[in-house]
Length: 415
Image (cartoon, rainbow, N blue to C red):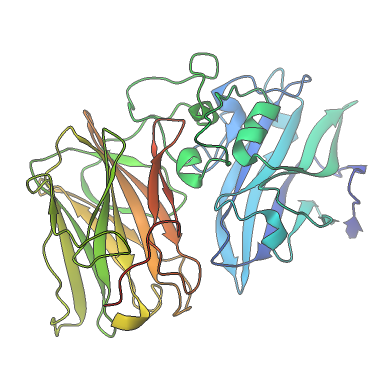
């Protein structure tokens, strides 16, 4: 049986168990994340365990479980399962929210809708139009007089994740240099010091929106995908970042380096507007090993060597394919990036969320944070907007983690 729930209305659910799905038309200019907040009667989280997102997809009580997003045709689908019979003590409500992580705004999201499914009942929720909002409370699930109920909300925030966190009692320290909602690198990474525990009450920065996460020191052959938690590998004297793709087009790899003094250095064999070519930085701390476009094998590769020192906070490899050097979608040519510490550990990120659009020129598979405990590798899989040949830009976020902002750097030179 299908029902329709208008904005602001509520309904009794036929079962305390079910799922909420959110879907929308895929676009390379938008990137949406789903986050659930477990709330008390006062509408606030109790602590770190009250936030369900990519890096903490399952609540310890089993009340909520975030399912990895899927692509169905030209539609992206996010799903979260719920069982309100398992709410922990003190929790009475779950707020299910969305953030548009490229700060494009939900006015550009087409065919956005949500559904609540319980037993054989499907309840449809459709919002009105949005303008510049980049954070939305979609629906609330709550307990009332022993019944599980749902209320259609569709309330928007212009401050994105920061606004949502403040709304639900996660204290955020305002940063005048970061007035926009935090990009996905904030929500999808843990503290740069993984051995320390962060709690809502102890740390006053935006990273309070990130629950305590114990990063796993991995060894062996590891595959990471967008949405998975970061990993940490041993830091060795030399680490290589190798990008591979099927023969048939020509990609270039370059590296964006973020230093301790807040500078971005572009290590690239070709220049950009106001940025000259640079093959090596920091006496070989980050070094491009040259263009291999002459390779005649079935797979092509380019390599950047990393001999990281304490002056480097993060390195972001970028894969680039411009009109001038041969276009080709990152999906069709099976682009992947592997980080190898040459001590038995390599981490591979595959561009599996790309599509066949030949006019997407830049891909950021992941980001490497340089810490005393090792190299934190976070899968990002960010893409430029169609026809954009502007480089990404790095900045320090209010969580003390480096962020990647697409399409706001200098335009790459014609090659």
